Length: 329
Ligand code: FAQ
Image (cartoon, rainbow, N blue to C red):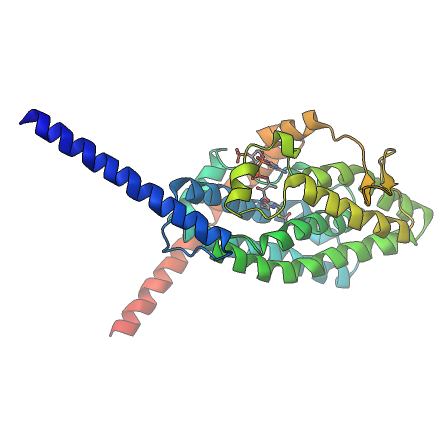
């Protein structure tokens, strides 16, 4: 009797495994045929986990990314500049909301995602752990940071997960205005007084390397890329995107008369791309692992504001509950 039960159990497990393999094969076939995966579709657990990790990291980056620029809203040099910066920072909050919503379709709540950020389990982009020391940094962030974000996000518009892909389309439209407002600040300062030009150059010097680090480690050192490419979550690798960004940006710096701080930057006729210098990978991993110039400050600020905002979340829930009551009566 016992033996029969073992055989039955074995066959059942075997059957389950074969069924799983079949669904996994079908899933990969859909991906290869460029069909989008939607929230209620079957998906491998690892695909779901990979998406939750990447989309939540992306959402946290948008929200934490409001801090370095928020720092300058009250010190903008004109009413026009203040209004534009305020609108841009608000846009980033909106991007965070689209992305949290896309992530929630994978079966995880906003509260859990924020908790992961506060517990240091979820990352956000390394770039937002650098301080913003002058008004020119608002130019450098718009031009370089939003510029780098667009290169990545244009590629992600074709990501295989439907809600993430659609979110990217919306975000890219706004991000290109952000890039232009940053470039405008840099262009104005570069043709201003000697001191203004120096401020613009100094901002470029400080933000250039951290901006190209946004694309992540080199492909040879990027453990997530293999699955991301197989599942078409990423459509281009970290190195491809970084190269694309550098090729686009060099000419923009030349037009406004600023110098990119890389002595190895040189056009390579054979490759049809710019060659560039080695990044400081120690600095990169240090910042990614929580030890950059502003990591502690950024998280502490987020925690504090999140706690202070609890009454707003409670009020919104209460209002929604009352609206439901009104509707049902
Ligand atoms: N910072 O194997 P890979 C914006 C981590 S949006 C921090 O290469 P993957 C808009 C990575 O998570 C900017 N961590 O990983 C804005 C992984 O750790 P894990 C954000 C990084 O995922 C503008 C480990 O290293 N954009 O700026 C970074 O294939 C202005 C190994 O790396 C996105 O998030 C980094 N730079 O490639 C807002 C785009 N790089 O999770 C306000 C979507 C790597 O295994 C103001 N994300 N790591 O513990 C992506 O495209 C990818 O996730 C990458 C990393 C390219 C970021």
